[in-house]
Image (cartoon, rainbow, N blue to C red):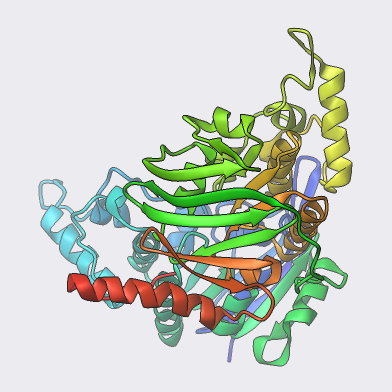
Amino acid sequence: MAARLEIRNVSKTFPGVRALDDVSMSVEPGEIRALLGENGAGKSTLGKIIAGVYSRSQGIVVIDGQEIEGVDEKAAGELGIGIVHQEGSLVPQLSVAENIFAGRQPTRWLGQVDRRAMREQARALIAELGVVIDPAVKVASLSPAQAQIVEIAKALSRDLRILILDEPTAALTLTETEKLFEVVRKLAGNGVSIIYVSHRLAEIFSLCHSVTVLKDGRLAGTRRVAETSTDELIRLMVGREVHLSRAASRSLGPVVLKADNVSAPPLVRSASITVRAGEIVCLAGLIGSGRSEFCEAIFGARRRRGGAVSISGAPVDPTGPWDGKRAGIGMVPEDRKTSGLFLGMDIVNNVAATVLSKVSSGVNFSNSKAEALAKSFVDELRIATPTVHKVVGDLSGGNQQKVLLAKWLAMEPRLLIVDEPTRGVDVGARSEIYRLLRALADKGVALLIVSSDLPEVLALADRIVVMAEGRTVGELPGDGASEEQVLRLATKYTASVAGLRGEPARATA
């Protein structure tokens, strides 16, 4: 079969950085090709070159036998190339239909926009994907999964030949991910070639036909998914063995965190947990179960309405994060970009933000103390940066996550809460973060970790506490637990509550 897409010796250079170096690959019609690699390997850059977002510095791109020269994103769309960006490209305050046909709305004979025709065409495109979304509603009201479907419908509104999906499931639940996979498989069955960029190896083995691995901007190899393994793909990505399996058990100290019957309406109804010094407790459950909100109530970022919390036996009732911090609690939030880091500031200022008294001489901020502190964490956490004065927004996702950890480790917390510790980071950085968290536990820090990634929960946890419907509903030992056991606890309670209410049970995770 003739190739739908051919990439021949493509390179891309940004000022001071060679993002892609002599990369070649070909994709057939109807093929789902995974694009895999560490942060900074060049995956998104290659996708954006194909979609016309970036121009290439050298090399050739061929679509259905025709060499494509110097196209922009609009021209690429007219050639049948669509891209769903990791950060999204929809306008929240416009309707679904207005987003799908932005800049090319159907018009009446006097040039007025034909809104009825636009809505009907949008409705038909969405129906092709096997879902129902009202084309008149604003995008702001959609779930992340629905927004992804609208992005794909936008691409489908042209004669789609190639669809590039860049980390499409990062904010999706398990059920939403399965719905997206159904849509992707349907498109591939209709002959659309899919380029699927993801860090999640399990998704690649579930969805894709083949996988191309990039390392440091160069082609590391291409494999048929049926003929490769997780270990081989990891070796191609990072050039070394990476261990994500469980570590040896460690001795535990006294109870650091004790939370009894905590309520923080509307999502936290009655949640209890204990975490000992040197222990890693993972909080699992379905999306909407109240996991993050429970942690926010412990830390003080969410007002607690009932229950009791103590740290090392001393009651705490924080009115804000500053009280939680004063009690020895650190919290690494789920979204590092919007609520965790100062992206426009350098590593020094980010690390110093939680410990200004440590890096000040009297009332004056000490640059030398702050720099020394930042350098110590750059070395300890193996943060890849040429200087501690590097702007954090310019670092890779994995290194940003390490800076966020450093920011809270600087205060030497007794309890560290980490919400989604490896979201959006590659497998090499994931291994490093696991090492860091285990090293903290070895030093006696109590760790409470929220994760939607069940393999991660099983790899890290000494104990697993499961939440559902705002309540803690069960507990499992980390050693020997299975994904099925965790999901059974989470879904059994949710199904029983839904039955009492006369509602359909939810199965998202």
